[in-house]
Length: 174
Image (cartoon, rainbow, N blue to C red; front, side, top):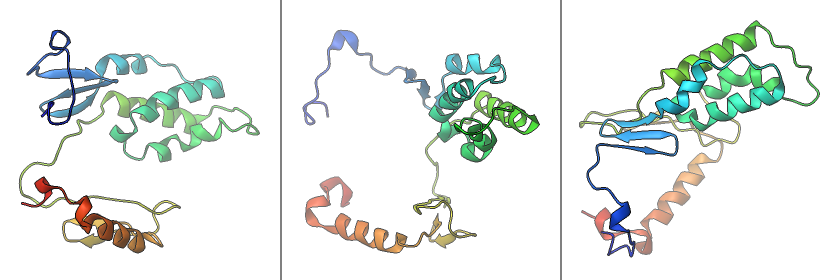
């Protein structure tokens, strides 16, 4: 595979068949992708922000792991408002609750894994420019989509492009 893709490695720097890899703040193993416990250790002792800059620092770390935290932007909304230039910094109960909830979610982040088995599963997708446009999501076979205004045209264009002969690879046609 490496030769076919014209990739080269230095064997003295490469390890084969290792059970776990730490990579860019993540731990990857046979179960899936985890947040790196060493990075999250500092979150446990993180004190409540006392300035907009400290909020930015915390939300920067939380944002890096956003795919592990459902509804991150909704949870952080009260904190994010305090980072705006013309808003007076007043840390209250709402901000403290959001901060503690984000800390808790970061410290107990789930493992991201590929789906297993032949069971159908639901995928939520939002391709609108304004956030979710429609509730409840539409069910399409085993796929659930939230439909935006011009999403149908985007899907049609993507399908048309994907069907062009130059975009079909041999391994896709089996």
